[in-house]
Length: 365
Image 1: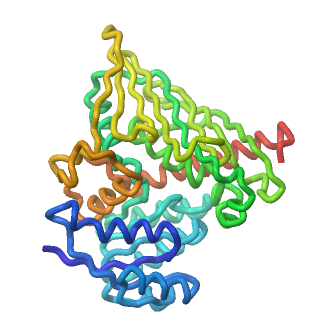
Image 2: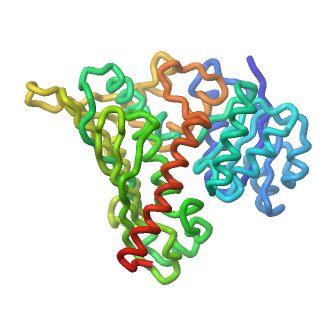
Image 3: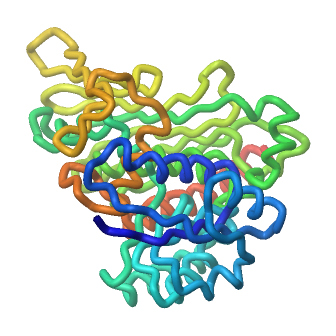
């Protein structure tokens, strides 16, 4: 059984979710790697020390100390968006690191994007880099993507994807998440939430998606105008000619955590909603009926624990993302590598430009 020493760069809320996923692997997968929780690093000594104690890490280190730790073989990058690129460079320079899990968005500026592409070219296959688009590993999305790729629905015509929250309507919540209210592309709804949506669209439609225009809505005195609270993109996939909309929102009341995808094609349609995450639906032209494809938590043949009929949760997809990261033993899974992350980042970055144009035209900022 393979043994891998792992280190966390970041000790916040998302790091807690990753700690849960990593520690849960052995329950779900017979061939899961044996993980040694070597080190956690963050800017604040108090937070990293508490995290290390609570979740069983051998060491709590400063970032500098972490970078010199020769035991670490896999790094999880989970700090603020603005340091993702800096921490990726740091991890790539560590002598024994062979795996890097990079939370989205992968970087925060066009210059970083260009430098990251150069790093990708120089790194090649020597280090595995996986980006944190865990919604791709939701069991029903995984099955829906396989169904779509089989081609029965034919050529896509139009699509719609929504990723909506409502929590930022509350001033107290905005105060707690102030670091995520920086102007796009570092922050904002499209960078934070929409990047997941863009990733999903690209998995189905391809990575050459283009923006034709963008809208921005919602305004609070304590939120910079450049930090979109709601944004909507009109998009086109040039090869197929498919067009559609993709929107991300932090201020859609009553939506909870909604990811909703619809694709309409020449021979039928497909749809998925996180509010009914145990299935996806498809329609074949001429059948006069939508078919509900129940998936539950089915990850066969990779694993059948706890059971295929058990409803999946948000964390279940993250557990499978960790399995994919450490083993790669799922040929059916979509692997969001750094190339995919950069394709998503291109749309996030271009969104900021389109939204700036919109605000200037309509004096919304």
